[in-house]
Picture 1 (cartoon, rainbow, N blue to C red):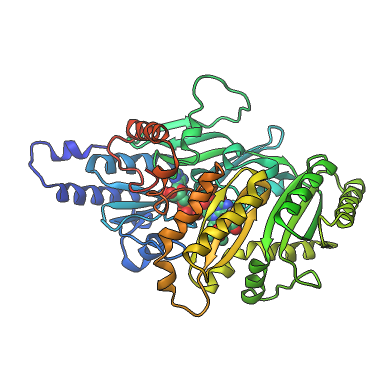
Picture 2 (cartoon, protein in one colour):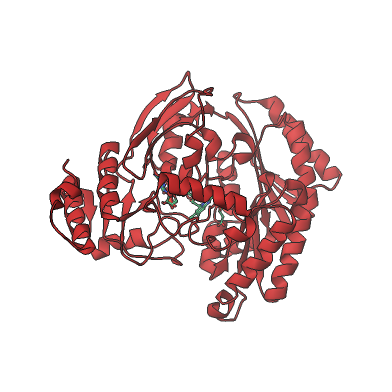
Length: 487
Ligand code: FAD
Ligand code: MLT
Ligand code: ZN
């Protein structure tokens, strides 16, 4: 491939002309089906899931392999064109859409969607970054193996996006975040070089663990093109219950006994407040309250065993719930008797986000605190929100077993969304200050993207920000990888 520099040698040419030449060159190497610059076709790639962020781009490109990604980056680097990597575009914080300056291309991973190999003995799977998460789960299942990353967006989010955001989801308690599910990575660096760390090793202390830099970097340091993922034995017996608890503290007592009594086999421990359940019942067809009376808080609890028909695990589960009922740690519970009932419980949890969207404007807080601090945090943060907006509605739910709550706020009923959204910064600030008081994080799983970029310096030490900047400018001195995100 001749460089643009060579093409232009000896001529004085404006930066716009350099860009146009670069775009022509990109189109040539990608072929007709490898890009779009059609306004209508581009729109979904330029707009984020909630519709809060949209931008503009020179081109959307669909590379088919790592060499193409490398060539694209080299051409862009030379012409100072920015690159916005995009997977399923389900980011909650505007991370995958470009800014409106129109100086970017969006690099969609959707054509790099092959599952390359599964090693059942090594318990690993090698995949391209554009694989949809659900397809990865199903491919593992077909080999009687389990890939545990699970989130409500799994039908459309892609593994590259999951790794770039270090996604969490509903199984973190047992298996860890996305970061912990990766053994090896292939990454294209901002100068186009390919960093091949595609190993399936569980132990490797040959220097810095470079893959960790890219996991959770939200596309600001390079493009993840392949990954070696960890697999696990498939859960064969799943015990699920939808439990009503009298308080958040009681929920934590339930967590404690569930962990101990099950031999630490709790896979899911999700908190759902009554307000969330009400929204789901209101907006999502075919959902119903599994209990006969309303309660303030619920926990969706799942305990797994890798043994078939594990009667002992089932018995322990039921005994544990019975004891919890006697001691009023739970007030009532429905135990799933069939897979369909279990799926019905999950519908109440997984539709929390969708039903909140259907209810109107919302301001999200994806926060974590030490698990022991959740009850005090919950009360303090709610009081802080009410001071800013006395009519606000709390929509709190999430991964209580990880100390991670989605402490979301829905607009007041019967008043214009614009009045509520005008208080966005104040409401964010109110919650984040309480998070700080409890030594928590203002982004437990969704990342920083554009949404929390301005907030970050208030909640991370100057030294940490400095180190992040050093890493960014060492790897991406021209600042072309996903500019305007994270830092
Ligand atoms: P995108 O949105 O396309 O991109 C996300 C970020 O990663 C962007 O900064 C993008 O530039 C970068 N990126 C994408 N692909 C690559 C790549 N190959 N190389 C480098 N950078 C890349 N998140 C959770 O963690 N837990 C949840 O429980 C959860 N639940 C959700 C529920 C719903 C209904 C929705 C809509 C979202 C939810 N999310 C959740 C947020 C979102 O799904 C995750 O952040 C997901 O991991 C993003 O994957 P994606 O493929 O859509 O990435
Ligand atoms: C989830 O866990 O369902 C999402 O991360 C939450 C959200 O909508 O804030
Ligand atoms: Zn979540």
